[in-house]
Image (cartoon, rainbow, N blue to C red):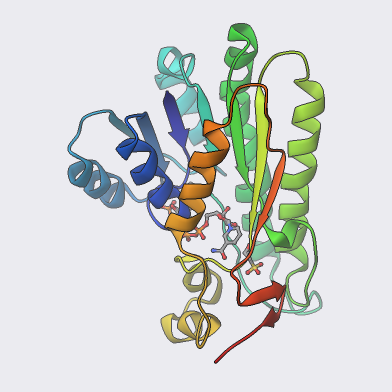
Length: 246
Ligand code: NDP
Ligand code: 8X3
């Protein structure tokens, strides 16, 4: 299958790219850091891998990507809307508008903009699978997480809405909702490696590969099965903020 993955320069996206490439799929990996895209391409051997650098939240860049690859985008069988981020953990009364804008623009508007490049072609072909990276933060809220959670609640609503609007087209839509995964997520959110490491101290979090395996399984279900939502926690986490540490 031809699989487009947004945000494949680290974490879940990179692990998913590696997993799906190892299964023989043709992967198209994207992100803002071109050095990382190049390193991934070099490490996978340049066969069945294409790279494109753009910011999903920058609508001019998404449009330019769409125009430059109009033909290639018609053939995408699977879109993995993985690019996303959290910024800050401040309470709502202390938060920064620029952080809120970046989260909403990346996690919600960016997901929609990339999906819009792909969905009409999938509808014409009457086949395709869209996998969105939601989160347990898209089902439950926690203090200091209001805007990030709102963006992931939106991903959940968009997944449900896509399923409803696409009913009858054979297109599947899935929302993968992980708990704590040790990636660059906490470093991006907190801006400090020591603080990021502390998030996972004394407990075993999920890895990007754990989520990649899950996505691979979701894609491999027979075409009459649509895994719509899948919550996956580390065993040491029972709820947001409820973590068992040794
Ligand atoms: P990482 O920070 O390791 O990876 C995030 C990826 O998204 C990077 O490849 C980054 O690439 C890309 N990205 C971020 N912003 C943009 C943008 N504006 N345009 C294009 N690409 C972008 O974190 P994760 O792997 O953990 O995160 C992947 C997804 O999983 C996110 O949607 C996150 O919300 C979700 N998630 C993460 C959990 C966790 O605990 N880690 C739990 C639940 C969900 P680049 O910087 O090169 O642009
Ligand atoms: C990331 C999980 O718990 O940091 O989506 O919000 S959490």
